[in-house]
Amino acid sequence: MAGAGAAGGRSTIAMEISALLDHASALEEAGRLEEALAEAWRALDLQPDDPRAKRMIARLLRFHPALASDDRKPDLERLLSDPDFDPDAITSAGWMLLIKQQKLSPGDDAQAIAEALENEPLALRLLHEGCVCVLDAELALTSVRRFLLFGERWPDFPLLTQALVAQAAHNGGAWPFNAKEHSALERGEAGAFAAAYFPERPSLSNGAAFGEVVTQAIADQYVGWPYPVWSRLLAPNPTTVPRMVEKLDGGRQSGLTVEADVLVAGCGTGHEAALLAKRFPDARITAIDISTTSLAYAAERCRGLGIEFYLVDLHEVARLGRRFDLISCSGVLHHLPNPEGGWAKLVEVLKPGGVMNIMVYSRVARLTVQAAQFHIADLRDQPVDDELLRTVRRRLIEKAPRFVAGSPDFFSLGGVHDLLLNRHEDPFDVPRIARAVDQLGLELLKFRLPTRAAEARYLREHPEDGLFRDVDAWAALERAEPFLFSEMYDFWCRRAL
Image 1: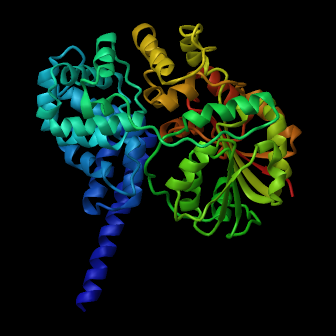
Image 2: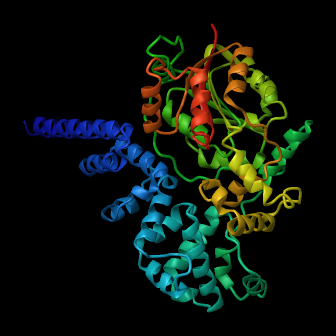
């Protein structure tokens, strides 16, 4: 009877958590974000390992970091160390909270900041777990680093020093420094503290050779700066490929198999491949890329997930001798010399009835990046090394921070290289996507919006398009909200049977 009682108690808690999270979702769709986050925290209080609660908190704080509150500092610190949580989802929220608490701010006395942070568990954990992606926090921390260097004070702040060294490893040594700091580092005055400026670089693999000029340039780019840098995943809700496709398609039977063959075309450092392996545990995951360095990084991060990695140009994917039920291609096509031509090569290895998830740059949303690139036009054709990337960052911080400070990519060397110095870029717009889908014999399944609130707003305006397939409505939506797709267009399509 005791066991039955315990099971009943767990069931009651599960029902309460589900009710809280359903209410939180409704509040989020209504734009009542602070209330939604409060409900999600209450659910996590009831069960600290509840994956749905963690996913909702991560989503809300990623897109709305100013919602972080003082009373949840211990919870933020715990989540930053959670092996099933992506720390990048909440690092901005953590730094914004510390700024709000006046623990650090640009222009503050550097010694006072150092003394405060040496005894601030949340700040130390933030530095250890992911890139600092809030510009005011970075500027304050670079002043602290300078203070520790010039006064040789780093031995007096051992916890902060260790955390700054860890931070440099995350961002690749992205924080700019002045000539005086450079001289001190060259003279060897920093000792072990030099690692807070110049992290140890990973061993680099030799680049592969490709016949096409643009392909070779892109491959060479990622030899020195694999992208994206990541450490852990936010555990997704496990499902199957057919169940996921049927949900996208309003419940219509997909005809796909649970043991689906999945291809990640342009896997980079393996983040997306790892997510798919965890999301579809019954599927077989294959991942290809043209960067040997990125593939080595991916293999190390994805160890134990059963993913097969191959050094293969997307245009030659047929060499694998396989066909796939699902192909994911995120952030790749717009870097190809002929995006539609590369897309067609993927369609050739997609099984009839198979689905594709495509993510590409929006031409309109990239206008802010192009504005930033205007300020570094004289740097863009120079040979790239770490110092050039720091120079790019320094100039934009000084001259045009509004164009880049909102992008997490700006805060690491690999990210800023990918964001601003990519060797080739050919963005899309909604009509171009529609033409390609039609010409390639595909059927549009669903466009995806970045937030639940945006989805709810769209459905209020277009109640007849419950599956998000009205191309004209999407084009009108982007005209009304030009930077809604600042991350990328994200859509699903299917090959006809």
